[in-house]
Each structure stands twice: as C-alpha cells, then as structure tokens.
Amino acid sequence: MAVATRRDVWLLARELAEAIAETPEVQEYRRTEDAVLADPDAVALIREYEAAKRAVKLSRGRPPEEQKALVERFLAIEERFNAHPVIQAYWNARVALDAFMERINAVVTFPITGETASRAKGGCGSGSCGCGG
Image (cartoon, rainbow, N blue to C red; front, side, top):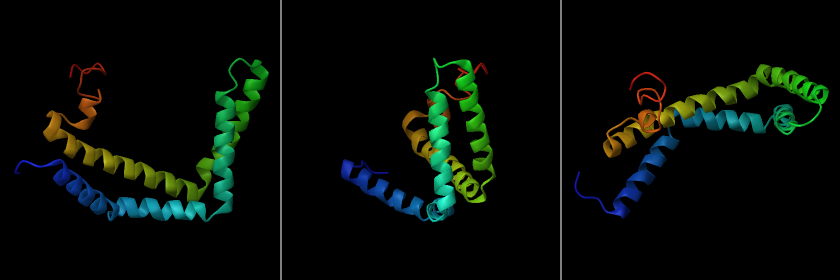
C-alpha cells in the first residue's frame, strides 16, 4: 500500500467500522440487545443481578454471616440470570462478538507489531503463562 496519510487511515478505519456493523455477529448482538431491552423481566433481573454483585463486592469487612447471606442471595439471583433465555441469548451474542472483534484486532495488530494481539497482550505464547513462549 502507498504511504498513507492520517486522513487515509481514518477513512479506512471508518470503512472497516461500517463493514463490521453489517456482520452477522454485530447484527445478532443488536437483535439480542433489543430483545433484552424490550423484556421488562430481563431488565429487572439484570439490575437485580448487578446490585447483588455489587453488594457482595462491597461486603468486605462485614461480619461473616452477613457476607454469607449476600453471597447466597447473589447465587440465587445468578441462577435465575443464567436460566433466563433472553439474557443468555444476549450473553452468547456478546461472547461471539467479542471473539470476532479479537480476531479482527489480531489482523490489524500483526502488521504493526509482528505479533498476534493475544501475544502482544501477554497471552499464551508470550511465555508469561509458563508455556515457554
């Protein structure tokens, strides 16, 4: 490729973003996000889950029996959260989108660093995990 100006790079980045927005991964993520937002039970359960998670996180230094009660409450909510089909469809779409974006990042990163994104971040293959990299 010819020497690119910053403007060229920004235009290419915009084109890439627009192309990514049309992929099945992004479309499924948006569809499932809309489904969650349209489901009052799902929205309420997500709020309840986040509040219970926050309560557990902030419970350090409290009496053990209080911490235990907060953890048990969180686990009960988490079970309902994990069983909710609309939330799980959204979660699965988010995981798929994250994996897709990581693969794109690896493609973009390689010509710059000579390493895949996971190696550049210290992932497996870098030696930081004990694999000998």
